[in-house]
Picture 1 (tube, rainbow, N blue to C red):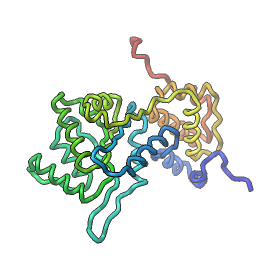
Picture 2 (picture 1 turned 180 degrees about the vertical axis):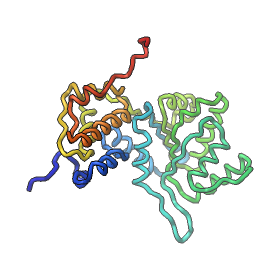
Picture 3 (picture 1 turned 120 degrees about the vertical axis):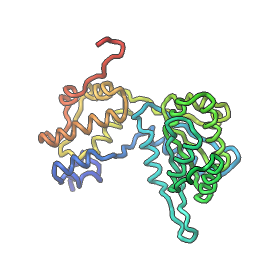
Picture 4 (picture 1 turned 90 degrees about the vertical axis):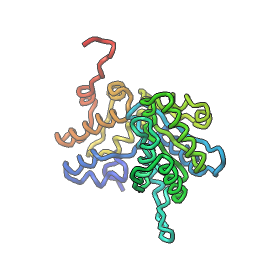
Length: 293
């Protein structure tokens, strides 16, 4: 039996029969595309989640340029480990808690954000000590097995002293709860963590490098094309693939944005596939910062 739409993943084929507007809505939605580096990151997160409690827990720093997919990796991991409500105790157990670092280092604001992330409205006019006590009590009830802090590079907005206080807070939470910390951020986040000798020795750095024109990128692009419900296969030349990665600076989000835009256009104009000509015509290289306008 011949499979219809063999150029697409099984889960995508039913969408090909939909209207153009419905297919475009599907294309514009967030999607997970598997690739080796992301799979490796998920594997490290799984290892940390299963790590037995001890006084000195291992931690992970996932770093890379903005748009490289750090948050999407954590969201994928979070979907695999959703909260579980215990009806007997009335407690919502969360294996993974994700909180975003505040825009500038401030312990009180961070505790407020942490309490909001776990669905607990912080007390009004609470002292820092009260916020700390409430946060620890609720976290211990929820029995998390991992705390994820996104946008850690925001710490650089503070003074050296403010950065040290926030890093001490993170280390304190990890020690008190005996759970791994996972920090996400840019290359500046790596520098911030390196600046604290105690934390740096506990964090394993895991980078998400910019894409290059190689087999790994072709694998990523192939996975992306198989997820887009166009009725014809897209057969791209090496020059078009190279233009796609080089013209977007090797940034995952920019590459996805261009490809989904080309797919939308292909559905609207009836082409139903992305052609090398469309890439070579529509993908422009970013301006060279060293060249005056």
